[in-house]
Image 1: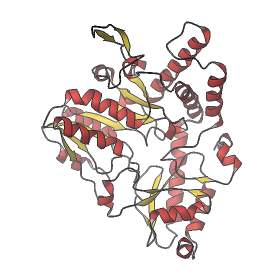
Image 2 (image 1 turned 120 degrees about the vertical axis):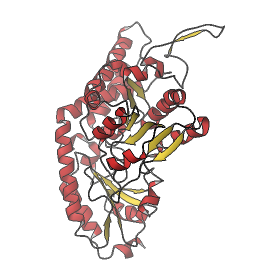
Image 3 (image 1 turned 90 degrees about the vertical axis):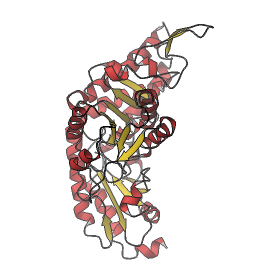
Image 4 (image 1 turned 90 degrees about the horizontal axis):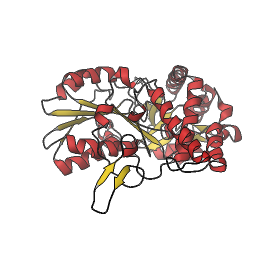
Length: 398
């Protein structure tokens, strides 16, 4: 599916199974960024001349494309950031710092990415909120009963990844949001692993806040999105100050800041990246999110069935329904296995995948993670399985 659009897949025999970390980039992205730099690389929101106005049109055009892509109501609800981590920090320190108080509880899980843990830890140190964890079941899934039992009268926020980046569990977001809102709890969604793979409609899903990154969905690095319901986002305070986010200031300290979304986009943004991301959104829409999701799940099911043929394989998330497969081989360190697979030009991620608390739940320090994109194939999975079936694998690693 569209493999010829990716130079890395055409130019060598690389088998790229590390899409959960970042995806490969299609020609259309490089072409668009090159076009910007070569033909109209002016600043955004700054000029009264033709090429600057062209930049404005394309930069703000991307904002509208993303609004439509995730089903938001207003372009003002779309804030450009530098990635999911930046989005989460803007949100936690710009909104929840001022809307939570000492003793208020925030619910996480132990499977969350560092970006959805460390900012909350810092806020807990700063204002005294309490961090609690929704227990995971034996398959490392979130069950509604466990979530409901974790909620107290002091619970104000549930901050959770829609799809976890280690075990690929798809959380029952619709049920979580419905229950949370019935109890006056806000829901923060880490969409880094889900927006590239699942069709979103944030309005019908009633999502309060959503963060995601362009680079995990065939777009450029250094571009992210923070979505928030307008009535919530309009009460956020900026954590960065400078050009672009103010309307007026004087030497007495008087200042008037811009309205959304400029309020949260201080300084010169990654203009080339944002414009390029708009082209990638068009590219994804031309393929179709439903088609992408269906094909990736087909790859996952095939991979699980083939990997079960391998002696000494351990699969940690056989029952999950995302494009992530997390595994180890008995008596082989995860990083050593990843290095071994690299000999066959197979790229997988090894480590704790920025979810350092989860290792205690798994009872292991590190795993290998294989994550699919629409350009992967069953033939590539066959080559991975062949490499793992090698009878001399342990000797070759040593």
